[in-house]
Length: 362
Image (cartoon, rainbow, N blue to C red; front, side, top):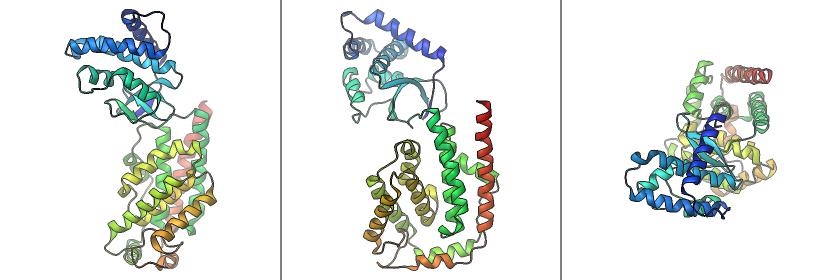
């Protein structure tokens, strides 16, 4: 779901529709609290239900939806935004925790009786952030103030430069490239709501990627790590980082930016490629969010030891408990380190130039 600001024109239209609805329907002028308005709107909802077809009552349904959304906005915890899959204008209310109510969709479902919940129950549930299975109530990436976003963009570019400059901390060129590509994706999706990983990969390809080569050397290394048990290796990595993510003390600004992609990878780990690349990507992204890096390393070592019998044993090693061949990967004869480093440098320069251009325009 894409979240974007509403124009002044659309905000005015929403406000006017809400005011018209309240003037038409609200019958207890002495009440001033949002909940009292919602109770009155509940009676309007019952009337619209009894009159059947929502499409024949489209204007009334929209007015009711905007009047309901306005009561959430009055609490101070919600604000009007546009939320849609394709970037079209769809007035909705969004809170700072990343919860959205697409009010027209929600009220339409109530009028057509696809949803049995009422407006009062929904209002209370949204304010309490209770789990509510209602059409039109969704999770979205929380919107960050521009100054915060700008700072995080620069932190991400700095991390990309660091990744490129510390080649030997990675076990293979493919790990290095995967980590850089996923940090690039987080940066691009922060700048462009609705941006997909497929678009990041297409951009990466336009810069000449994949930059890593050595397919035989990578294949031989992986045969010693998990052999034919690739899914077992991927599962071990995913479950290990699920535990660490749950325990992690997170830096709030970075958490708001990084959480959607980290959790998508935990749900769909194949997006990161081979298990060793998945391990490197999750290690790096989650580490970027950690408030206390040393505490993160402690969690990581404890979880590795619990799952594999040795604090330095990567999650993706499938085999007997105890030390493994993990250390031997640093002696492998990969030839594409330099190509990956230069490829990442081209991407970082292009992204950095784009940010500098934005600075000049401002």
